[in-house]
Image (tube, rainbow, N blue to C red):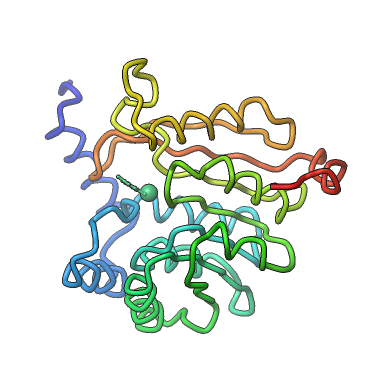
Length: 232
Ligand code: DHB
Ligand code: MG
């Protein structure tokens, strides 16, 4: 059996992607437009995008909140996982990213069910109304605990919460790693483990983006009981 070298895991990622995800013109075009515009190539891998899509379908999500749009790649996956009359609200701090995402979403045919809120998430989140059935957190890692707090506040028992990039090439468990994004990621995971409003796990991932991880949680029925007490 092959060692888990980068070559081997990328081969497996390609195999899984080819076998289970396949080619997709709208998603390819979204990545191409994002690359052409010079945005960083940090969108979720295809297999991870499909995981988001499946989580939306499995949970029957109608309202989805995404924090961190980038070029809208994961947004397309999420939007395809909800009914035509559902809604994805996605928050993006960079106006240029938001413009590219708008074009990508419209080209993919899901623009009518996606609202892009351009602004800093910490400013936009307090303005959101209603509840969300799925929340995907994929923005500045320093704010993960704040975003989880908002996920608890804007969700309901049963809401699915997903956090990207929780492995960070192993840095998350490296005692010498003290960069602010690693510390923020760790604090988020510790909150997911300790806060009774969340029931969570996390999986390491090896895909075309390298060694990382994804946390998945569900909001418990403690959410309703604490709603009045939360002041993020
Ligand atoms: C980074 C952010 C991401 O959301 C990601 O998926 C990969 C890397 C980063 O900030 O380095
Ligand atoms: Mg990410």
